[in-house]
Length: 269
Length: 147
Image (cartoon, rainbow over all chains, first blue to last red; front, side):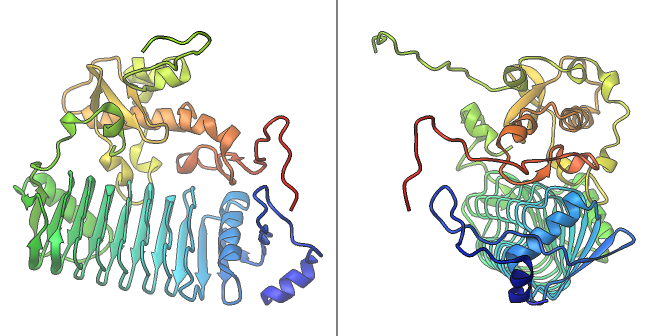
């Protein structure tokens, strides 16, 4: 059913509603069109708007108790699958645009295509697996969870990352790990200039060539914990045998948490 | 600066811990037996500890503590922590705090969540939905402008 038909069927208001700020309140009615079978739901997103798709997902997860959802034809729309704050499995058959699956806490997401900027930004927990490439700022400000990109990554991957693990089987562009504060990145291919620039903490593993290290990013000493982490993550996501990796950490010449005020310290925990 | 009559200075504290926010301690802060049955893998998405990998035992005001990012506060631990189990204990204390709904961040949801969401987040299955009927607070005596 097209969006026009949905509005016509539900009875469109004669005058647009206004919110407290005087802005037009958009139509937030949930389509409730997903096919639900044996606790699994399929959403045909071909003719749905971003708002309707997201409302449908939340209705299924929060109200219908559905734990596995497949979204067909996401058509690279922006901001799909955002702010899902519950355990569920979410599969997008196709590509996503900008800010896909941001602000999530709990879902296990699979994207069969590519993604635009800022996939999984601000993720608290959960897993996001992208079969194709990802644009810039993947995993920006991530606080936890795993982001796996089987293709290449754009610039500033994991900028301001505060936790979690970002893995790519391909290459990553410039300023990867810029201002990284905690967490881990595993880049199997080459990395552009400015790796780990101004990072405060965290660990970056690189399998290929590093064009240039950023300010205060230095080679780190390999430990058994590093081997355990890499092997565990590769096994969980079926990524085959990990390549030989080099480890990079913060040189701690620029900044040191010990000198921070308590409230500032909390910002990075 | 001299104190002005009738002006109350806001309380100033050096740290914010969960006891300050909630006004009390919880049993899992004082007794290790309360957390022994917690299954960390089952409580987190994915096939390993996921976000709990980043949770470590820290120190706050000289006490072992774990940081609760959902309320931006430290949760102090008052019993002796067995050697080699520091991070495990920290993670279990945190999960006991979150799954019981005692985290101040979770308690705030009831009053302030603007969008429907599970009250106890992704850690408790079939947690009740909160935030579905949020209404903007109205200042007494204030009238919205005419459009």
